[in-house]
Amino acid sequence: KHFSSNEEHRIGLFYRLAMEGITYLLADSLESMKDACSNKGKVAEGGNSKKKGGFNPKRLLVVGGGSKNELWRQMLADVLDLDLCFPLEAESAAL
Image (cartoon, rainbow, N blue to C red):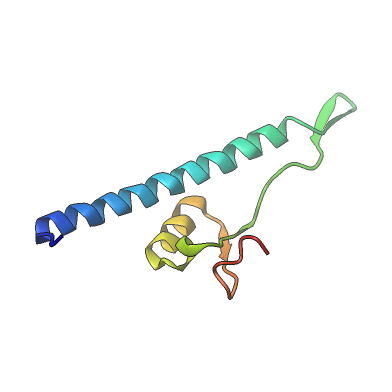
């Protein structure tokens, strides 16, 4: 089917919104993991609690077909505020 420029614009916007939604879901998932890990492994010492262990990632390995998309790479970097790493072979999720 041939799309008009207006329809193509809407399709492009739909894809961008989907990428943004998934990016924010990833950010929410990472925050949930941080919260879940921060309540575990505390050791009482002299009336104070010291956190032991936890989950605080500094970088994220991004794999799969979406990892080749420059726009999505930038969205991930901006929203997650993590260093992103990309393998030479993007389709390496199972390796």
